[in-house]
Length: 119
Length: 98
Image (cartoon, rainbow over all chains, first blue to last red):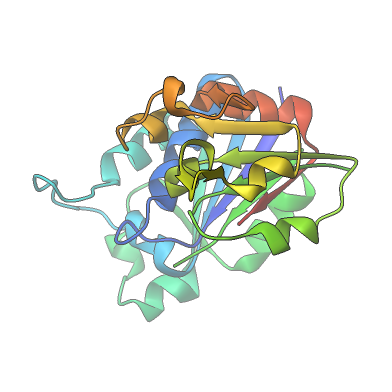
């Protein structure tokens, strides 16, 4: 089994890259791999709790919570979140907040890294 | 180096791919990138399909666009998310996102 670190800079809106990233993370975790997920730029929007699941609207809180339950380490870029008006008390419980060094440390200890670009 | 490249859009990325050098190059078509595997322009398939013999298209993204394996160029292997994870760990050392 290996260690996969994913980074996603895309939001739920206007891109399917975040959706792809979450599904890839889930599949890798289900196959027994260790998965780290770094959320940066607009990707930080999925770390916010109390996302309402409206019909036909993208919604990621449930898959994020499922990933956390599977042991996937998820971390938001703190500066990116704060710049978008997301405060730490609003974060989904279990989602970490940190700076870029968290991502860099994971990269160095990973077997594979996929950096998913933003919009 | 064995390089796996995720192609997520249906735009011309030929020049970018040509600048990549790898002992083994794989192109993994996802999202709108799967159109490279299935569509023809002026009767010609995507020029990306000539860049390597290691071509993959994500089945779920084909299906959400109304495409099936039958629509895909015979050079492209249709893969699942599970297959993609195996490609990542077993076939390619480095990964890129286009």
